[in-house]
Image (cartoon, rainbow, N blue to C red; front, top):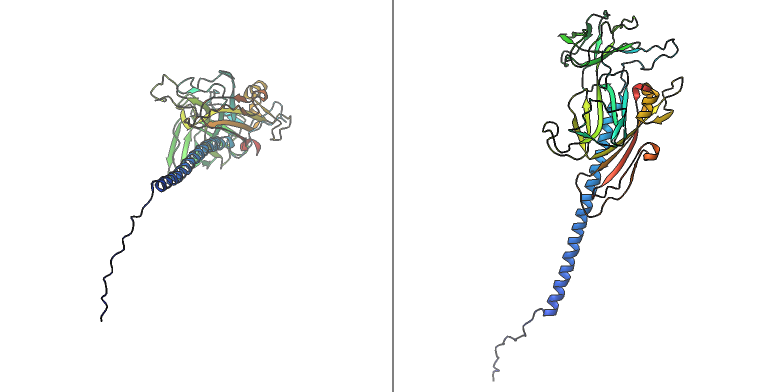
Amino acid sequence: MKQRIQPLRPVRRAAAGFSLVELMVALTLSLILVAGALSVLYSTKLTSSENERVARIQETGRTAFELMMQDARSAGYVGCMHPYTNTNTIPPTSYVNSGLTSATLMWNFLQPVFGFEATGGAWSPALDPAIPASNPTPAAGSDILVLRTSRPGTPTFRTNAIFASNAVIPVDRDPNSASLDAGTVAIISDCVNAAVFAVTGFAPAGATATISHAAAGLGPAFNATDFLNPQSHSFAIGSIVQPVQTVVYYIASCQAPVDGVICKAVTPPALWQIVSGGTPQELIQGVEAMQLRYGVDSTNNPNMLADQYMTADAVQAGGWWGNVVSLNLAILARSIDEYGTEKDNRVYQLLGGAAAGGATLGPFNDRRNRSVFTTTITLRNDTT
């Protein structure tokens, strides 16, 4: 008898899933993980923003120093000779002479460096009219630096013949180089004598040219008569002719009401520059203060080494500007925008603080980052 096989029937199982408790635990753990990830992301963003602000402040300080160093290191350029006066002669003989009739701030090339010491809301010596009192407004409490230096990016010429002091200067030139505009101030030197003069004409002729230096001339600085021969000296063949300029560095800001010309809007404090009496130019925003001391070689027999560091008013009082061989410079740089909630309640000491002839600044009680930068610059043309 055959056995009947019954078909298999599917086994019914109870419905499976997550309980409410399990779902709540899973959601809680997910929220914790998401919160942790967001916290890490936010912390990373804050750290990145902080690092960026610090980097910008450091860049501001380095760039400001680099700009001033370039001009300071070439301050007092007199070709291949040294600018010091020979004190062994009676009276002392200066081998660097200026043929300019003006000795105002922008044209006194016999002083490689000059400065103004901030004294509260004023300066000592008194601020020169060449530095505008507004638009932009110089920062009270910040020193001002003046450098007489060679002009970067301009051609250098060499004389190809001996010439009379009242005759044009014959020079060799690169036919592809630029010419000299009338009114350009230049210096001629042959390693024995040097003289500063204003160019009144430039006549190129292929690989040569002639440079005129007529009496009077163009601009606020004029030539005196027979200025190239103050000591009966004839400049040798191969003498160097190099354009020079005066550069002023100072801290300023555009404040209301603006003039709409130089200052088109209110701006934060910045490093500004004036070149040879031209229009003030903003260089770097975020430079809030500047302090200077001048290294003076005050010995009877100059050895080109700083014997003491003095403020500008002390250098002026002692008549030591011709003996300045180095600069001690400090700036305070800040972030442009405020951030966070923590206020800056620190006190900043520039060059040892007010008690040491520098400046004590702060607390500012705002939400900006700040940093002090300090350096010493050797005036190479005064020490070599």
